[in-house]
Image (cartoon, rainbow, N blue to C red; front, side, top):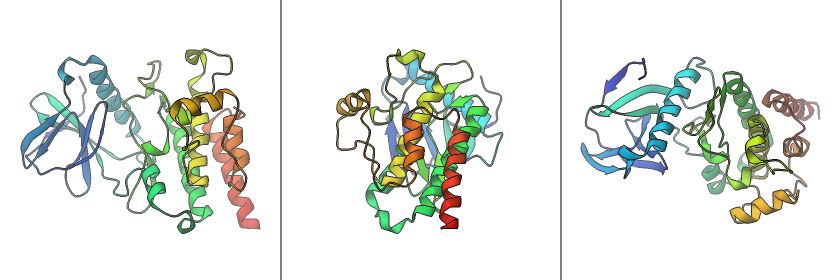
Length: 276
């Protein structure tokens, strides 16, 4: 049980913004959304994640996300989706209420918009905010564990916010998920479970910085298996002409010890731009 307070949800007209393994994201009001396994239209229960009641894994993931956001909410300045607590969808069944990032996820935004419209200084700012946020949440005992631009949201004022913590690692609790193949660190002779979580997350951060700077997903033209095999051969996406190439490569080569180190390296690039 969670000690935090909750509110009873009134019937509302909703639309689905996204769906995943643990439920749906639907509109709650003009500024917030609900993440849960039930969704409604015009006050009528229409869609439910089939089998939820007997799916212990999904229930644990929902519980984990709530635990994580209870902790992250202790720092209101974190660049994560703002959390407004649990809402009782039906007696005994809760969804989580978040701010509505109306520009959607960053990966979709990149696909829909032109690189030329977003200068390198702005994109560097996004990368710095993401590195800084990961550094802070790591210090709070949280690893996102599936970091990618698809799990970074973009608000109306074009601020980046990390989202989707239902698979996160928390303290000594193992994650429920791992990075997508396009963001997954090569095993390099190690068993996957033996690779430190920080190394996995920093490799993924490098992929995220690449996606922001190159304006495309790393190895996006490849299937998941092809991307995994390329990384295993120590092949990486080309970095010619990509800003912060040295930082990205440092993440891929496991040269950084913390997200804070990545943030410092990115800030050095900002200083270089300002001096040039």
